[in-house]
Image (cartoon, rainbow, N blue to C red; front, top):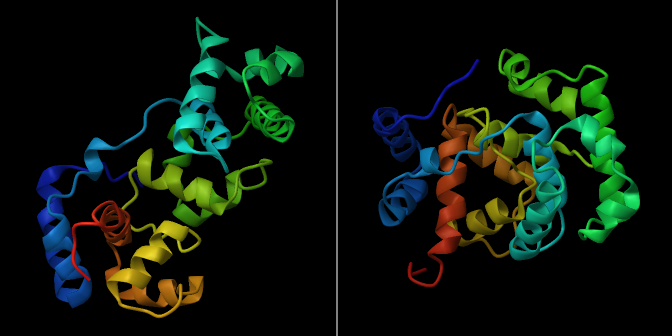
Length: 214
């Protein structure tokens, strides 16, 4: 199922998206080159999902600092076994909240109990991966979709729960209110099978919000 991003494939996706949606076409032209292939994550399933858990509901700066201190607890290697053996008080000392400690340890336990590896997940359909991972405490649909986009390199992911995506749609399509998840999903029908590329451009359009005219 894997579809590794490579620059030569971008023209095909961008041509299809621009033909399907004039608004998105204009946005693509103004944002410019797609750099999604330079933003891919690395690491095994535990390292990727543990970082996602630590990043929830806090600023990017704070999340980076906590993650750095968390990883420093395990200078040789970060593993589920080590995290399960780490007293909660030690994890609290590096800034991890008690709910997130519970999430990390649930993730570690489920991996020990046989949660599929990234290689095994890569052979599965997107929705099956979501259903496999969301029973882990603290792992919701959005978190798995980020894994699909930035680690498993899936091309057709549209995270309709993402507030950045919805805000970008509102701005690009000149909507009065923030669109519902259903409205974004319906809009994204025309972007298939390249919803991931469309999502990346919507996110980047927010970075350019101060310089791109309405």
